[in-house]
Length: 195
Image 1 (spheres, helix red, strand yellow):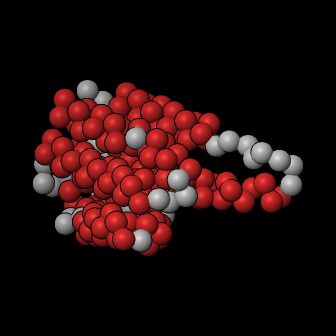
Image 2 (spheres, rainbow, N blue to C red; image 1 turned 180 degrees about the vertical axis):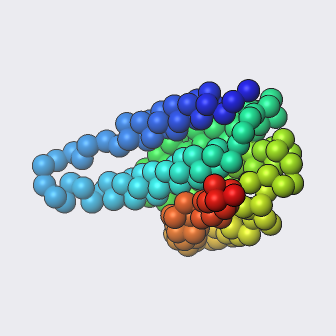
């Protein structure tokens, strides 16, 4: 089976996730600039989560260019990733509305960790289907960026037990690692095109 349906489905799910997140934003009660002040944590949580979902969409898009065909294992791994991404709107809303209270910030980090692990499972499924000499396997190598992210998410979750804002800062820093699409994949694709 080709990758087209998987990409189209994933794009639709991610678009719905972003739509749900923006619908969670409520307008301020009042007509002064000061009316926005209570919404600052909610807006910050939204921006952080929008950034994360955009990063996943961007990297998923790049990764799919290395896929020649998909099997059931890849389809299920992709659905696994979509499941965890679909929880981001709920945890974003809870964390923002609670002004970064301990439990919501811990749960938010746990969902980010689950998304990261699910993305890794998807890369493993693609590597298994396409072999150790596949474009994705060559591009990712040992996947230091993914492994570092998982360590940072765990660190952020642990920090959130004691100081939730430090946990949020770690989540923000981890997103910074991924702002630029994974260049390893782009470089590998360029090498293949030159051959």
